[in-house]
Image 1: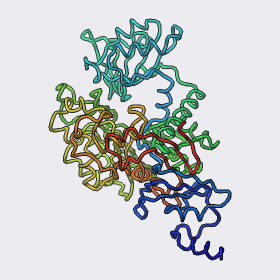
Image 2 (image 1 turned 60 degrees about the vertical axis):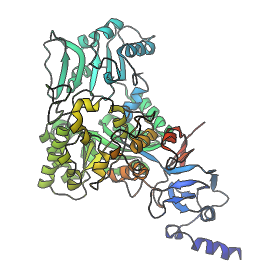
Image 3 (image 1 turned 45 degrees about the vertical axis):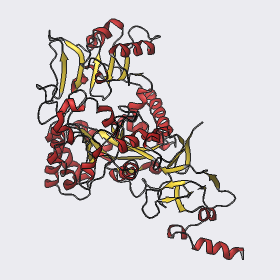
Image 4 (image 1 turned 90 degrees about the vertical axis):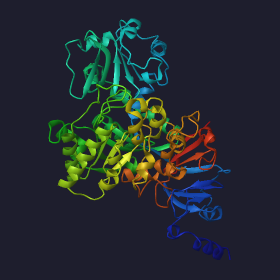
Length: 560
């Protein structure tokens, strides 16, 4: 009789479970589980076996899959979502920031210097001091700083402080001396040296000009990089991240990722983009081992993908390096910088179409974005390919006539919701009241039929994906300002915001058959929250806490 009841219970299960052999390793019950799978969108229970989702459905059904060795967890009404994926991030950059002076949020140049002093009180003369995160747009004086105050504070140490967006740096006199940068130093293509009226460098170097200073900064050791990466992975897990799209790394860093993943010491699914290798066919590109190997997917039990190339079209809006079709509204002599020429992007796009790689290009300004769209269109005309999933990273300021081109060309706009909330205090001053309507234009793009994988660009923005969700649905900062949201017609719905952090990044990385939803057969990556962000008032979203993070059915983070 007991045998028959068990048979009928199994017969009632979803087809994905009917052929299953053996019991679940893990069963979660009594929760509110958003699967991001339209066939079963909200359930109360989840079963996992062998690192994969075995079943989603009711508590009674899931319990049938448990035996004496199954771990059964009562969620007590907690919310479960597919693991969050940050679709544009810099893992080593985050790890380095955790080990350097963090200047994010500083309200003045004086505060920047005070933070550096506090961080380096035990530093020896001659040691390099590195930091990141200053943003002059947050200061009362919104002009770029000059080096003098920093040089007075640190006369015997070279100091280099990178702007929040990574597209400008401030160097003191000692650092410029070691780099042999002086009034006669020429600007490199795609870079700008900000100068004092006398012609002497002010200390600020924009975009490609940063290389003049960066070339003399001592390189981190491999051991330092490894420690930084592990710290960054742990930080990601703490915020509910199970995956990232790593927007540009060199072969040495990718090799460390492989080493960690191979040893089982890498609790993250990383879709890595290879940093711009130089011109196709150049010695640097030919020597790049990851280009030689060809596209690689789901390495080390789905912890590493290496099948994309990251290029740069222009700079950033905050440092006025974003390439605009017309001059900046607050700097009429400046239309921004092209970090690389359109021919470079087109050449890599043609190469990638032939060999199966994806190309993802940083573009902020309307000219920068148009150049990329034109380059992609030209490459696709020469080498037609369906489902290429080329991406523009940021797609931040768009000309209205270019918005429909993403869908027409099959190009994915990879955007970052918290860039909008960070930039809204000054972005309109940069581009004026007309162009701003094509900026951070999520709804305008979604209405054309594209998807928007969402991210943070950390360490440019904070790692916390709940900030991303809140910004996407409110267009407000963490204090819930401005009332009603900034250009609120561009908001996402909560369903879209959740998709933009789960299944849409999976699609943008060719991972949708393995990741992005809690669907039987996919990896069991999920996050447990202490409140339901799909239903609480907007003002309560950021009060939510991550209680645990799971990758492949194994807990990688638990709140204390």
